[in-house]
Image (cartoon, rainbow, N blue to C red; front, side, top):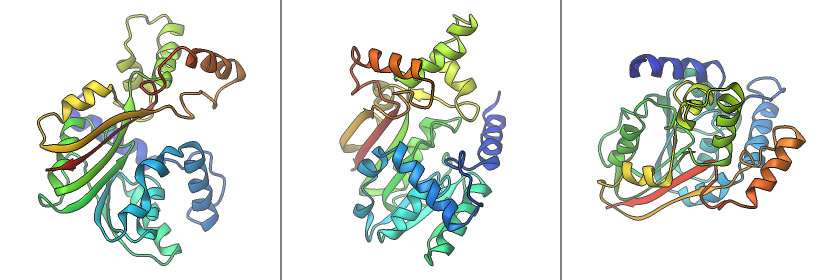
Length: 265
C-alpha cells in the first residue's frame, strides 16, 4: 500500500472516532462527556502528567501535534500556554472546538499533517506529541518536522510505541502465534492490528537512530511500563501471566510508551 493510500486509511479510522472516546457513554460534546474522557485518560495513562508537565507550558508558544479528543491540549491552554494544535481529522478538531467553548477558552488549532507541518522554521518554543506520529506512514519525516518548527533552545516531547514491550509481545502472541502465523513479525502484528492500519513500534535504539543527525542536547529516550503492559484490560489469566513475566524483565525497557525528549541547538 502506498503512503498516500495508507494515510487516508489512518485519517478515516481516527475521523470515525477520536482517540480516547471509546467506552464513553455520556452524550457527545457535553461537559460530562469531556470529563469522562479526561478521567479515563489520566487514570489509565498517568505517565502523561509526569511527562507533559502542563504547568511548564505557561507563557510559551507551543504546538501539540495530534490532538485526539483534546484532553492534553485543553490542559496546555488551562495552564496558560500560547497553545497551537494540529490534527489530521475534522473529528478531532470538532472535539477541541467544543471543549474550548465549554470552558470559555480560546486557542489556535487546525487540520493538518504531521509530515508537513504548516509552520515556518523556528516557530515554537515547545512541541509536544503523545502517541501520534507512529500512525503516520513516514514517522521519521514527522520527527524531522517537529525539529524544524522548534526554535533553537526549544524543547520537544514525543511519545511513540515501543516494539519491545509487553503489549507488543502480547499482540504477536494473539495475532501470530495463536493463529499459527509463525513467520509474522512483531512489526507486522502491530502494523495490521494495532489501532489504525500501519501503526509502528520502535526500540530505544531505533528512535535514537532516527534523530541522530539533528543537532540537539539533553536527549533522553526511555520507556514507561504502563497499564497496557500489565494487560489489565483482559481476563485474570492474562493479568497473572503478565505479572509473572514482569518479574523477569527489565521494566525500564519493556514499557509500551517510548518517550523522546530533547532541546534543539
